[in-house]
Image 1 (cartoon, one colour):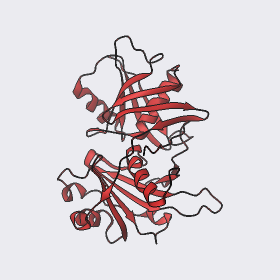
Image 2 (cartoon, rainbow, N blue to C red; image 1 turned 180 degrees about the vertical axis):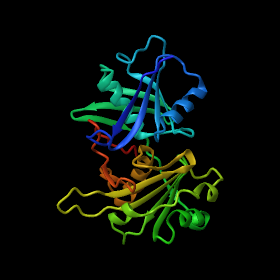
Image 3 (cartoon, rainbow, N blue to C red; image 1 turned 90 degrees about the vertical axis):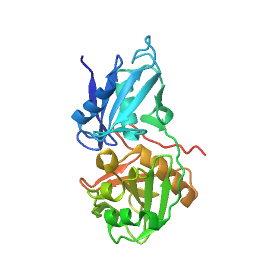
Length: 279
């Protein structure tokens, strides 16, 4: 059986930059265990599988498809950059004729629509709740040591822990912060936390574009030590920072220690990635 698989670099205009995802088009039903085997072989943070929902569907004419995401270790309920990559493959490589695509996923129906200079995604908005510091003290200290923390929130829908660093820190501090992910699985093994978001309030732009917030994302619980930028994390970050800043239109940037890429969420591989707040 031959399966077409594409590798798409999201959030960049250059090859071998940004956040890569694999996209696999399924003409027929795939054995359940093959999804994980392929994702493990691709060895990217996420591999997306697009499937037809009806026998008469085709990837050029149809507008609604099933979509699943797998890390090398497990299936995940939501991945923004792999959804973006999936839409890019259908629009730009397969030449799908529709202006809007709908993906049926574990997180509900997600839409991707053509824009003048890219693609716009609609993602869910996940609220956060205050988290008792003492319940996650060991996890936070293992990850970032004595770094000053201003706020801690938990997203039960996504099982992500959001840790806001002190406003006294600058962007460069978050960029260069060495985060220990190796021992997190031993410290947190209850299943409550599946992802750790570190975030920081933005700074005035000056000569450059201002950002409302910065972030980094870690998910060793699903086999991804650090993900350069992920839509599921920003679906949580958008909820939090919208409340904190009193804004619905925001610019966020994800900073990635390994390559120090400054990834503007509104710039991508021929794409625009916007999170719309559903409030």
